Length: 92
Image 1 (cartoon, helix red, strand yellow):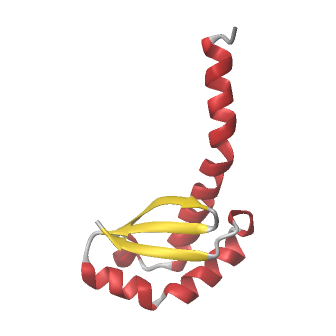
Image 2: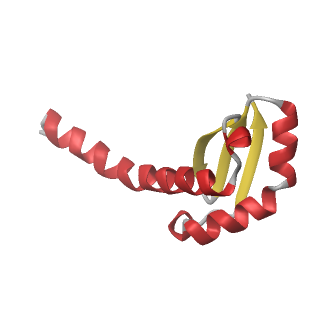
């Protein structure tokens, strides 16, 4: 029978790589985007190489989509372990 401690450790061990990817992506976005644009978006998650980013305003969503390939190239260079192949910008 598993103890609560071993179950908790197992969950932490499984979440750690995903959290490390998100932290790397978050740091990279801070370098790649101007502050005014960064303040309108948040990472929703990453799965199978697809980064989901939520945006709170249509104009900023358009701006992010316009810069999408540049952002993707920058994230690939700064966070190769994340293996990002696509970025989906969606409105909240």
